[in-house]
Length: 431
Image (cartoon, rainbow, N blue to C red; front, side, top):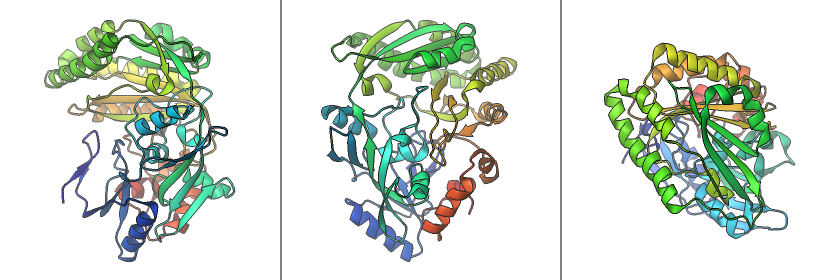
């Protein structure tokens, strides 16, 4: 049996076998059969989590064949989609129907079920994470039962919309979509000293706002996305896209990271050059095109949600740590915002958050940097993204999530034999 690794390459395991069902009913039969045989099963989508949440402990359950839109109602915006549908496939199918997701992250390689189950959130002060758009889902429990979950069962609905793949296997999702919309993106270089004191104003002034700070410098790049009329069509020139997004941000950036990994002292000058190379640009496009950017340079990532008013302190403390240590960090720090929701294990559970993400080249040293960031975030009640690297266990997470015990009780009821467990889930949810 060949080994499996996630996108970043930091998780690598060899499953005993791989199950590849073509229909939800076939999936239910395979899961029930495995459970009866005392096997463990772990569903996997695109493998874009940086944690080992999808790592197979025994059998791996691939959702690659469960892809596509099942039904759509343009009047209500309700769309049913199979769980293994990649976001990039879903967004284009929705656009053809005149619909769109209310919000998206900046990567669209994930499957819809993987994105929802790990808490993908996007950015926008008035917009909660993607899982808040879920109005129903079909869940196959480890005994092979197939149940539809929606607000008529508030307890299970509160748990299953962001279930970490611990309660059952999601096979189908109903989303509340909105009419397709266009965005104008304005990207501009700026200074940390100018943007950080007014960060909350920026969050509130735009439908979507994010900031990228280059560690070891006082330079940032900001991106603000706002609605424009459907008739406004000012696309990014093809040459500019190929130069900025494909050549500079991926080809050159990847080659430079390979060099600075061998010569760490070159990182700080590299960050100054990279920041100065960015110039202001503005363009419009369908929402899904403006949200998402190509990412071919592999990296590892840790992200914490902190109360939105703590964002300035976290960035200031992290900048001070970088300045003291002169660590070779070649990737920018990403800062976003999202509205609260009522989902039990959502990082946004009953709290508006700033999301701060640190990255490092996949072949570079990251442990000291990520540990320092985690300590800074912890001082502000930071909640780690479930699909991004962190070291927290059940005790720490229970203090951060008021409904953790309730979630674990639902897990005990639906998967008492831990058919869906792996090492990561045992660490964050307990045995």
